[in-house]
Amino acid sequence: MDPETKEIAIIGAGLAGLCLALALGQQNIACTVYESRSASLNIGGAIMLSPNSLRILDDLEVYECIREKGFNFDYVEYRDVEANTIEKHEFGSYEKHGYKALRIYRSIVIDAFLTKLAKRNIPVVYGMKFKCIVTEAEDGVIWESADGSQHSASMLVGADGIHSTVRDYLYSGLTPAFSGIAIIGAKLPAMQLKLTPGFHLPVTLMSKRGAFIIAPQDVHCTEVMIGKQKRFEDPGIAGWDAVEADKQSMVDFLQKEAQGFPEIIHNAVSIIPTENIAIWPFYTVPRLERWSSPQYRIIIVGDAAHAIPPPAGQGTNQAYEDVYMFALLLAQAKKADIRKALNFWQSYRQGRIGAIMALTNQINLRRMPKEEGKEDEQLEDFNLDWLYSVDLKEVVDDWICT
Ligand SMILES: Cc1cc2nc3c(=O)[nH]c(=O)nc-3n(C[C@H](O)[C@H](O)[C@H](O)COP(=O)(O)OP(=O)(O)OC[C@H]3O[C@@H](n4cnc5c(N)ncnc54)[C@H](O)[C@@H]3O)c2cc1C
Image (cartoon, rainbow, N blue to C red; front, side, top):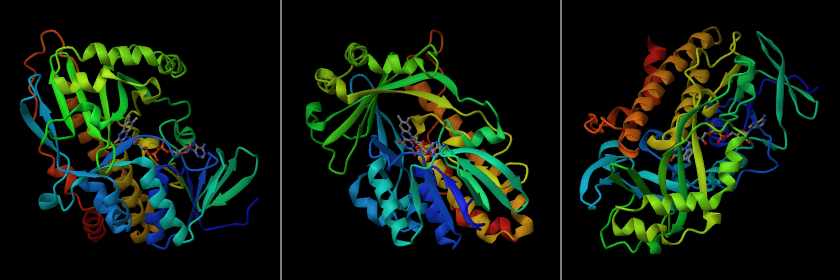
């Protein structure tokens, strides 16, 4: 067994785990990240980062390293089938929130985290798979990795994603629920769209048969992602492999659905190499009663605690809010107050996650084909100041003062 240590063990070197390590490092709290993969995951498309999390990345000195490496923008435009602009969905604003939104490849953000962590001598151990908790006591945790070795830590944080093994310790056998919707998306050269000058991206083109979304992937918008959501019967976790393997059906779906949409969509779907197409079923983790173990030594964050479907583009953003606020509270709360601090953290964070789930439902109403008799469903305005303007330092300071 490792010698006794006061370090926090972080399970998972995804976007949440790496950000947590930096946030703890900023507070001079020692930690080590353990990742089951043999190296960092260098694949995956782009994600949207909004001001609420860019403020966090700025404070962690990561924003300056990534800002110029992604596509900066203020809003997603909604257009009808004639390509007339109907509304704009704000994703960021320098004037209002201090930051434009940033669409950036996941791997660039991961590399930026790893560079900062290396500079601060915060270890990331690859090829170390968490297996189970051996014991949890008042003063720490002993856990076991898949190779059979045991390790001790003052706390263990599960940042191990939607299919979290750490979560099993809190909720044995809980499995994420399929929402009934998946998005089929393809990455394409932007030139293929034959955009007219001034045509705004990202864009959502809406019809009664659902919506196509087009979003830039990189800083100069040389590559775009085009996608359309589809309702699915749940094939079960294993069943998705067969759906994913049938690439031609996915290409056929996008090409068939393009009928009735403007030229830009026809151009987009004209050539879709099968190796560039993928499907992402939307799974959710139900609202959990607790994100901490009874002794408050085992915590879950990010997708492990609250995976939310991607339409609002907030999965990663909310993971950053989780871990940054967690680190601030841990640094400030006196030992005796840690339980209270973690209760406050969870209830504050769940309030925001609940509001984002409601926003996700609103976006789905726009994106999905209209159901019979629901044509006139009321759509709410997108006023998202509550989402983007949050200052978690202030939130924590206010709580500490009360
Ligand atoms: C199609 C799609 C588009 C999205 N777009 C956006 C977007 O635009 N904006 C946004 O904010 N979010 C977006 N998201 C959501 C975002 O990807 C997730 O919310 C985010 O990646 C969650 O990060 P995480 O670190 O919690 O989990 P993950 O990224 O899943 O990382 C978990 C890590 O833990 C490791 N791990 C797992 N088990 C173990 C174990 N037993 N031991 C050790 N390590 C382990 C994994 O290998 C992995 O590296 C999107 C999601 C999808 C599916």
